[in-house]
Structure formats: structure tokens, C-alpha cells
Length: 165
Image (cartoon, rainbow, N blue to C red; front, top):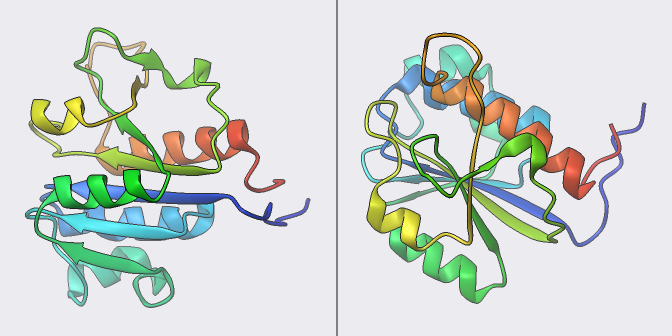
């Protein structure tokens, strides 16, 4: 298998108000494995260094580019100006598309993942180009945010062929 990157493709993740340091650590580690280029830690999302983040990230917080930003809308506006397609992962929106049917081909994608309890705010959702969700087969209505991010990150890379896995 080849892990060759396709030139000109960028994939960012925006963590908006994620509370758990363990989830943040998992997101760092998964982002590294999935070929994410940058992580934005917005709102109350905790940032490294912290022992709980480091315990789960296993060093990815040292090699993965990241930025701490207070307001998610500022990040979104800047990325839109830079030509990014803004994608939200949220399961509570009526017009959302199943992530496994997502077929947008974009050179620059930023994926927003939100609070473990309240999801992504309606104000932030309105700034997005598209909303996707992960369908659930059991009785639970959602997955852990870090697990959901992992599924979405690999699916987005598969559809956009940033990497040849």
C-alpha cells in the first residue's frame, strides 16, 4: 500500500467546543493517521500540553500542526476566503447527507466536529457548505466524537483521494 500524498489537496479539522481532553488526544492521533494537515481547537476545546491529551495522542500533539482559536466563526471565514469547502459532521440536521454518500471532490476541505453533548451550534451550521452525518444502526443516536471523526476523516480522504491507502 502507498501513502503518497496527492499534490494540492488540503484537509483540516475544526474542533468546536469539545470538552474531553481524552477525545482531543484521540483526535490528534487519528488526524495524524488519516492525513489531516492542521487541527483548529476552537472555543472551550482544550489544547496541549496536558497529560490527558498526551496519554491518548501518543506524541501526535508534537508532530501534528494545530492552532488554538477562541471563535470558530473567525476560522471558518478565513478558510472560506482561502477557498476551503466547509463540511460539518452533525447528526441532528434534516438536510444532512450520509457521509458514505458524500461525493464532493474538493482540493481544500475543513471538517467541523462539535461538542460531545450539544453538537455544532446552529450559527456555525449556517456557515457550512454541507452537513454530513453517520447513520446509526442501533438504539444510540450518536457515536463518540473522536470515533465519528475517525470514520469521517477516512471517508473524506477516500472520496477526495488525498492519499492512496
